[in-house]
Image (cartoon, rainbow, N blue to C red; front, side, top):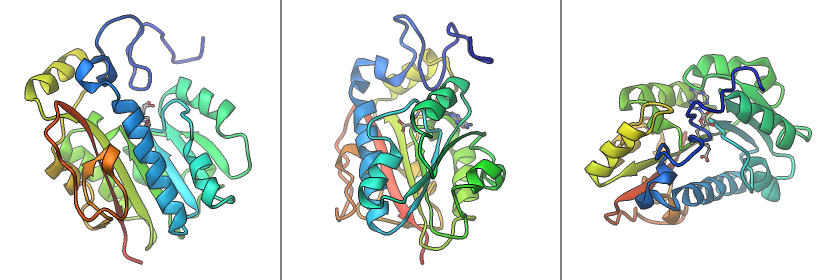
Length: 245
Ligand SMILES: C[S@@+](CC[C@H](N)C(=O)[O-])C[C@H]1O[C@@H](n2cnc3c(N)ncnc32)[C@H](O)[C@@H]1O
């Protein structure tokens, strides 16, 4: 067994074995939120690469998905470099075995809540130069922090990003307050916070929102003039913002 891994303990990357409703995807209203989130991350990374951003930091990277960020970015910029960051030992062993297999891709163990330590990590610095534009991704992870803590984290990265960098955020949430409460109660891997569109917009403070601003993840495209916000029981809210060059 991997050190620090208990298969019986609910976990942010894997939910929990068995039939308990412990992750957003286990609630019928949230069905499909995982694929919608991954499609958004892929669109955003592809857009960033088309903008000429050749470095990516994927914070709370999670278990490997297809396409992974480096695969999406390298379709556009074959030399793109990516640091996957996670705190979960099983995620990291998968990332090291399946993602960090080529030059310019690394997977590091770090707490994303400490931006200074993450950005100073020698393994990250081996592939990422913070003096150059970077795409920082916080996909489906800020709902584990309350809004104040999430703002502190995003401000920590935004304040250290080189001009021309971008910040990509998605969070899962519920318009239906009852479902939001249900998930918060039943999700035992971590605290769960049901962020509003206003909260998510505040996570981009000091940056310029790209395209539609904060919108439903499945609709985000850089060229969209405004957000699409239908009432839904469950949704993934997403946005991308840029630090002025
Ligand atoms: C729901 S998964 C999201 C995976 C991926 N980013 C995505 O968008 O599909 C959340 C991930 O964040 C990681 N995570 C949670 N808190 C973290 C922290 N403080 N530092 C680093 N990773 C963290 C978990 O281990 C998990 O792998």
